[in-house]
Length: 162
Picture: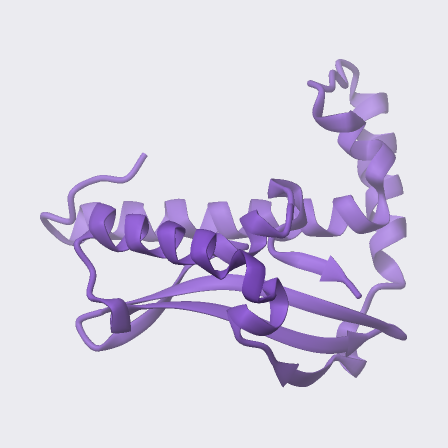
């Protein structure tokens, strides 16, 4: 739950909430691409015993061991037009205009990000949305309008295999 930033305590709670949300998004990305069965097709999972919980975490940890992105190389940036194509730009503009109105932003204060990168021998596209507040840029959402239009699911966290 986002709290009004009325003081240091509320700001710290909001920061921790955001940190937890990003951690969950990164876990979702990993599981979507590396341990999809563990996502259980997005149905609730029940691991009632300590043994089942330990087995799940051990399998998750083992799967994560070979995914060290020390070789990650950003290879480029893509604009929404390059990703979506001309035929989808009208819908994209509607989506952006709606978000600008919802958040009271100026057009230059919202940016869709598309980065290409290579990691672990694979090509990827990372989609996100950033917002400028008080002359600082912040990551607003993984996926953004472009990702939504490309069908990037929540658990993918803005990542698409190329």
